[in-house]
Length: 469
Ligand SMILES: *Cc1c(COP(=O)(O)O)cnc(C)c1O
Image (cartoon, rainbow, N blue to C red; front, top):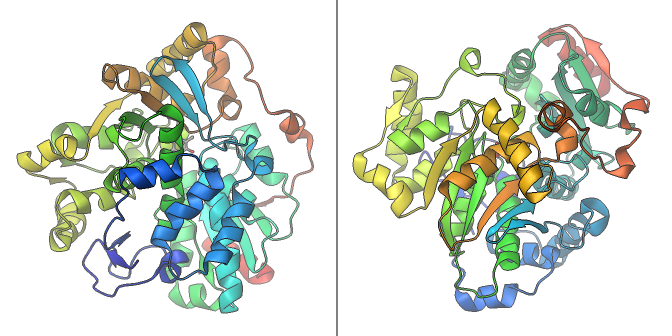
């Protein structure tokens, strides 16, 4: 399998070439040159497999430059009951006939990002060792991504993590989760500013190409193809749990921000998994919902991005979205380059044709909806009263939209992207109870913390890197 760029760079690359990279050199995103097709016989063969074995089957279709035995070992170490809490790894939580949650948040940081990041930690360590290289991961986080990256990379040989977060602005749980890590290769830098300041510093350091090369700076952001690929697996795993025949159709609703999670669903559907609808659920930051309703993509700046009670979806420029548009436009790279390059830069938006708009649902199964704080609170209450299940705020956005869009007779699977313990304040507002927390994390906030507080300064962050790499 080889990979190309959505903006037309013709240099074809193998999996290992793009594993440690972000954007392609032409500013595009990497995609496989074609999607391997999975027929009914293959589905039948995969149906009985464990999660790890299923992951090996799917990853092997996309990775041809890691020896099979090595890939098997890496995947086997990743998807274990010890890490993800259950033998199924992503069990369904039935709510009602034809309605279930897919439990993706039982990993170490209680959000779905662990599903991919845990594998990325194994792959990075393996590939760096193979090349005799080391990597210093620099990132900015407002919560979920940073903690998932730190828990995936803790103790990994050849890797250090430098994670910037806004001082005092994450929830006490999220701060404790990151700052309690004692591994010497994990560095928490709390900056006296907001998330955008952290993001700006990461950009400034990454744009200093000489510094970046000299100190081997890299990232683990959501456009990484390996992360997306790892997420494809749980669409198959959920399908097998929800159905008894290999022709039955199911729908998925996906709480969305950067379009990474639902893009993995798109890839699964393109491979032939019988998915009826792929429902994109946004919160008040509804750029994606606007696109699927109107065909206009109009990303917003940080100043027009609202702070909501589903904060991991407070994103107004969906970094993975270009991958879907590339497929939607029949892989016309020149047009993608024009839309995401020139048109967004000059006009601030682009629009697809009415024919292409119709194609989004007819050919690709996409539907969308949005949810507000009031909807979230009501849906958390409804889910608790009607089904006896406490859900987190992001999953509530998903369930709200799922109940509006689901079709008679088609199982609707809502991806549970975080556990309620992570976003306790809104759960208390909705239900008047403190959400349950895994027993192993009972004393999290009392553990000793390792964090360095710094003013918002590119130079001081660079100095910290120089002193610690
Ligand atoms: C990251 C995240 C999302 C959004 O996922 P995308 O892949 O960015 O669309 C939704 N919910 C939670 C809890 C998250 O951490």
